[in-house]
Amino acid sequence: MVKIDPDGLRAPYLQLADALRARIEAGEFPPGRKVPSQTELEQETGLSRNTVKKALDVLKNESLLITAPGRGLFVAERQDNQPT
Picture 1 (cartoon, rainbow, N blue to C red):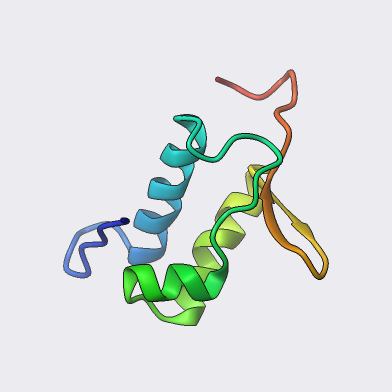
Picture 2: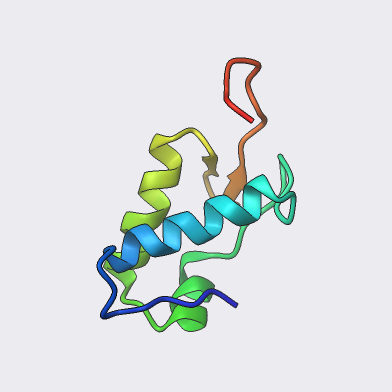
């Protein structure tokens, strides 16, 4: 379960992005694996739809997540030039 501190210095969407990134880097979500849906993350964290979307957009912009239309979000395959 992801813990978000709404009163923390770091914005909630960045806290969620950090938590998901850590789970990806730890191998909990390996490349090619589907990640929890936006709705599931909203329910798990208690964050608004827009906040969760912003967090997922951060990870998509970092090329950690890819969208498969009609199927959901998946962890992207690692590129050789990505840091470990």
